Length: 286
Image (tube, rainbow, N blue to C red; front, side, top):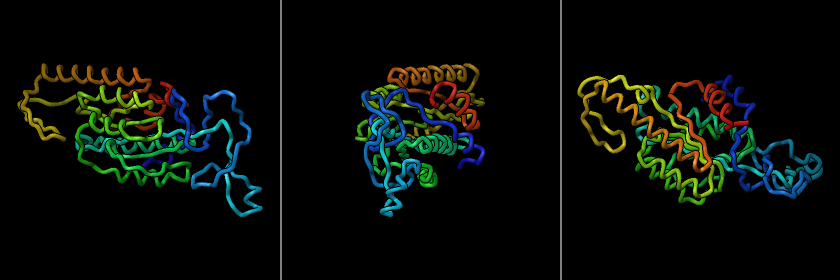
């Protein structure tokens, strides 16, 4: 899913949320709580993917049992990656969904490298599975993303509201979607109100950004099946572009109000450009 060059480029980055969240298990992120130190706190059993730097080799040699040393000021970060697999994401060549899968893989890899607790689900899917941790979970992450096939959806806003209503660990929620729903901004506000930090990566095809259409056309909504007839002339195209600009500005404003981040990415943009020129430059990564 990612080339060796892309994987090497991701290796130097960690996700950098603005907020600090309490972790479920000991991890590699410093907490914001005062009065704590980096002193040894306790032992816990080794789990696949754990950072071997914290393995107690003396205990392993004595008891032949792998255990991890934990420290008081280190916790994990819950990273919830939600990939929109609704029918509209199948549009384009390559499709928005194919490109979104690669973005999800890139974000997930940076989370695993950073010691975060990463989960990957289709947007609107409420199933619960143990999170992935550590570099050893790379293949499981890829399998989860590859298995995200097109699925029926009641719309982006409804799926986001469903996510907000679930009892997932408070943390960083990364949504990858075209987000072309007029109610998207209101739904994102609700998700932010649950205490999550929300990052929205919008993926749009070239023809959605700059339509090359002309004449009398019948357009069919990929999700609802509704039809509308239009005359694609210069005036209609200009009005469409203005509507898209206003919609995206509304998304960006809504995400900023809840302390999150927003970026719109054209399908086909090299992943290295997304990471270096968008995410790193704007403070998404450290």
